[in-house]
Image 1 (spheres, rainbow, N blue to C red):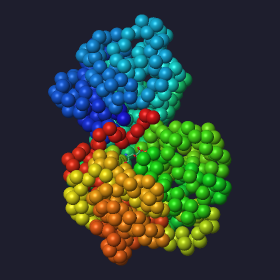
Image 2 (image 1 turned 180 degrees about the vertical axis):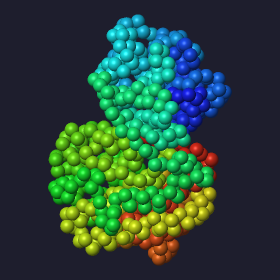
Image 3 (image 1 turned 45 degrees about the vertical axis):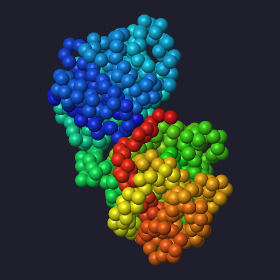
Image 4 (image 1 turned 135 degrees about the vertical axis):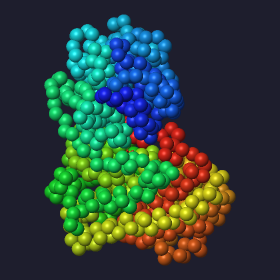
Length: 622
Ligand code: AGP
């Protein structure tokens, strides 16, 4: 997704903006640009396609752009192809060419989001004499602000709020006005934006890692709010232009937490951070041996009233939902549906006040999941968000929030956030089971005791990484992989398959083991790799039989099973063992070998592990 940065203070802006943009690269982008105030003119604008270093080179690492106030942007194209002319910042002037160079316009801006009605707004502006040099919705937004600013001869805040009333869609905007030389104006609806301050400088960014090096004091600007950002001072306004207060939040993430910490890739670092992420999440939800969900606002009475749970998410978060379904139904006896957010939001699925809709999202900004949340609320369901980013949009709009404590996750392929979400769902299941008297207090205590052993058991699995590294070195020519399992093992297979696909670009499929024979087994050829997840006592022998059916057609078998289950070696070609734990928590351990397999395969293929092609860390557009 697009990344926005801004700086105003006493130091040269461009080097700070470039550094901040570099910490947002994980969001995925295809072009970048800067606009820096350079005295009398509005700004000097420089843009470049491709990686950020092209822009840095073009501006001599920022030294060629003098000025202490500026905005920057990395663009992930949604309207208009990746090009210099479509790159941000965009300006209000009817300039020719790409909108680069010294710009005499009155307004310049950068944007993250989608202006859904930009065509009608563009036609309106064309009727008022504006011309356009790009194909973007952002240029329309910037010119619309300029239009109101000139037509009503009002200040930037009022011009922006008038624009917000007309715009449909999502946006995080950072704007500079020629008449306000050292200030930046910001506005947001549904797209992420934070504003950092210290005594003499102010910063804007789409995400925390961009400014953590400069300040830990941030404001999470609210939805439909406007900010006036001066050096070391920020003022907030609501849609009526009335001043409002937005609390300052201390970011506790260390700067190193967003660095690689000695690992080759963020992903490997985050795989190894999983035990800590799980421990921190458990510790935030279990106090003195008792589950404490007070902060979510979920009361015992509400939990007793639940008639149906709908878990709604995307990607790996949806895989967490698939695992949680087995755990919640088995422990708490509540029926659970697991829905893809992009489907849920358009289905007329029966929901009533006894339905609890759980939205799982690492970023808390995924557009499909946010839209599903709003649909659920419109239909009267109680909503609970399980998210990792404090203050994120989904966190703030859900009725109840349960935070995971995975810390900043930079790699596009999620690992530690996935694991933290798994145990958060386990805690929720156990809590509900206790409240609904499906489990005794002793059983709850026993389960919590077992959960507490997971971090150490996860560390033991990580010690197996060399075996996975060796195995992945044999997979250079693999072009099709099948991950299979039954019950919770099927849910684990889903995540293993996605990890492999998204970072190694090898086609793979996850299949319920019992389903293979209904068609897909026709794809099994000589040396096709079939990975069986074999952790569920009552089911794994059936999966082994399914694997043998594949072996008889030439497949090569890898089995992931629990220590002591040595009989599996009679059937499969390669076995990975994980420690034993309660059946319900097996996903937390079995997923690690699958993450490592995907990671090492990607490394062996020389791919960009942390920023895989075509993907973004947070999909904030539909
Ligand atoms: C996971 O490795 C992927 N990067 C992707 O599927 C991700 O899980 C999905 O886009 C949901 O993101 P969210 O958890 O931030 O909502």
